[in-house]
Length: 451
Image 1 (tube, rainbow, N blue to C red):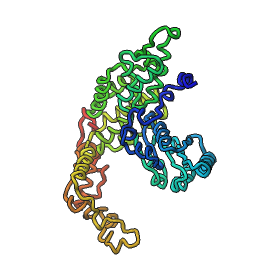
Image 2 (cartoon, one colour; image 1 turned 180 degrees about the vertical axis):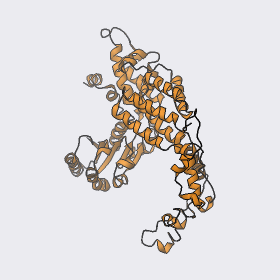
Image 3 (tube, helix red, strand yellow; image 1 turned 135 degrees about the vertical axis):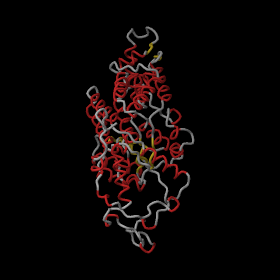
Image 4 (tube, rainbow, N blue to C red; image 1 turned 45 degrees about the vertical axis):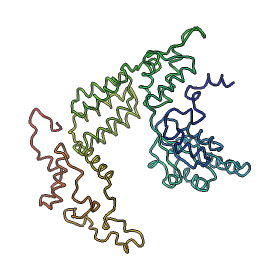
């Protein structure tokens, strides 16, 4: 019976680990001595939120942790469960504890999809320990999960699986299906999966069926790169692993270098090779802040809109959206001042600079704050004619230190000049960045203002 189920079940389910030692990847959670594993093995696992991309093992780790801790696992999907299903699950957990003395781990997949009233139902029972809540989410829980519920849970972060982890899973999957991976097949499976084990194994499952064209027992089934391509609707990853990453690097550097032709060329080359549209959209969102930055802050809005459109439309139509965003970011003026400022600030903090907030800036809203001097001397900038007052905002040991150094590119130059004028109480401080931009030198007939 078990062998029959293993043959019929999807490969991702058939390969699902049952013990921590069988988990591939996520060593920071599953390896011997890791915090999550230690809590489960001690029987003291508390309410938890597992946060990470799709196909990284959230459900698997929830099951293993609950069973290792000796809890009875009960699962709900926030996509289909309502308040009634949650109440019924909580009542079963109470009965189980009262009748058998067994605690229940209530696993809620996609917990971010629960509305506030559904999440509120979980507060009292998770606080008293009547149940152990284990939620799984692909979304940032700080935005999507109630703060009250988050405060009762330990957050465990999962990461996309590494290439070597995916390759190991694919080889296990091939053995389970009685197949072997031919030259290039493992690389193609890994490159197509974006760290998602479920996606890699689903593609492999289809590729094995396509490779096994002969009668049963006719010989060894060899999965080739071409079978992987057929399993992915013909979108074969032609490059080697190194070439794949080289082309991604070329795409990013072409946009950064303001070469729209090269940027579009590498974008199309990557898509033709089977690169995920979602991955390219994410790279453009990052680049909008990393390389365009304050020279044109609207680039981030455009890149984010493109990323949402890619999710909504999907390929092949999303190619047009990606082309639009790629060309816009390649043409945009460039500034890495935000990147440099962030690095300088992080370096100062890691070097041990003070994090003592100046007294005038401290929270003065609670009872007794005034007696501590909090807020005394604070000057409200909106009361000043220029909208700016000269007062200390950094800790004492950082006064006079500058992390942000504006560039002279694009709109950032006008923003920085207006900022300096306000700080110097210049009579022209009322001039807007738009007025400064309008009076910038004519770029000439053969140059674009964005260059």
